[in-house]
Length: 426
Image: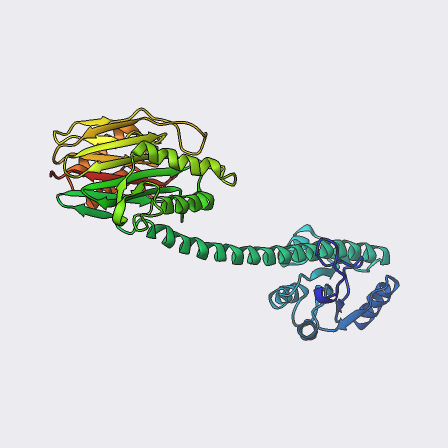
């Protein structure tokens, strides 16, 4: 019975009829043998088609493929085994159960018939009880085959629907990646003799890391590195929201800016920025996430940088003489608790020195030997990058040296981001 005509069960699968065999084909060059078999099948409520040769049977199968075939082994022209092989090659719509009639009882002959594609045997003369038993066995096989076919069809349809949904989500994620990349439009920024370089490498299409900078002028630049808890779409949405809070183009909406007269702005103290961001996060009951951050205000004339560290990895200071130092005392992430404070700290850079903010995806990156990069490894590759390039080139080289220490073909387990300030002198 065709699926379109079958009753549907509660699971959505076609209801399999109690009798699986609907079309039976008897193939035998003996007309008497065909009549005997047809009469025996009729007692079981089955009507059968008849063919005197394998060639005639194949023509019938082309027009109306049977469910079950009872075929003589020895026939003029094509033998029963040859017919079975030809039938298997031509009927692809469903499985045909094939019973071979034979007077052969040798084990080797039976094995040859099974290897040729037959499913079962009946020995002449055929007993009515044995025929009904063999038919019942065939029906069980065909019923299971039809159930499996229907379930596979349902599975294929479901997989096709899932693939369509996945493709749609993938297209959205690709577009979301472009939008997130637009949050960091410039990977290098020069202010006189000083430079900033920015790196943003999400572990998937989108990520929860963000770096950025902004300036009201007057030789001051605010710059930050932050990492939202979690991964994926939720983290990416929150980074987009935070990017609006720290917008370099809309200073009126930037929480790090304080408006002065005549539409001029100045940078607020880093501690005040952390407090303002924490108030927005904790006052929004719909947000359960938090984020870590290092935010600094650089004076491009003196080289001094005043910072606040909110649970983010310790900033790395690279001295001109090649020595390195980690700064800060940790602090709590933003958005975890209300009414908490952070302390500021500062450092003064000499000409040619660098200050690096970065996410923990960098130091926790997995290397070839299974270990993590760790802060010591960061110092090692940062020194190599410092000798190779400046600004955007520095952070690009930093990531390239990191990739060389990772296993070939390995992907990032976490987002990697960084921003470097290179002081070039007043």
